[in-house]
Image 1 (cartoon, helix red, strand yellow):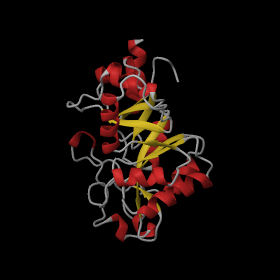
Image 2: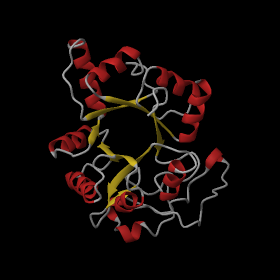
Image 3: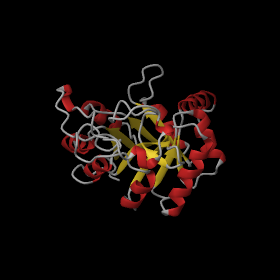
Length: 261
């Protein structure tokens, strides 16, 4: 990684340009947009398969209805994952009927072996943590994957499972780190397994402050921000030494930062 450019992370792939959490979106992010990493979300199907989709229900992104967990993998992959994609809000729906479907986690790990992947576990079923970690081991992706959840119960389950990957923080874990920074500002305990997953839009507290980023670095914690689609904010975070910036349009990150250098 360049000293000036943080990791370029595609949020659900290149989700501003192609349907989120699909192989097509991931290919665009890694290909034309030269992302260093992609972030995506995982739920569990009715037959116990980790599948890549953000919502617990199907309506927002597909032509299906109902909970993801009520459908088998085969049933889920019959739905059109490009059905609702509407860039610009013009009701053009350019990806309908293009064969874009919900991928399984295994498909993603198989196609993108050697690539950096950030896996957000959405469902709270404890078995999903074990299944995700086992698949990562099966594909030898431990060094290239970060696994985590914004839900604290899932985050804690990942830690208890002694994940062989780095682990990104839940929302509550971030507030625990904030409390620690207040009580132990000078000599924090090292926790190199963690990655701080921080919203760029937070205001109180402001999680973009330079002294906060510096404190996390003293703990050997990498600092990633989501979801950043504003070039000015990208440059601000890079100047403050963020380690990763996540965007719906990952190519914009590198373009914005190279123009500023």
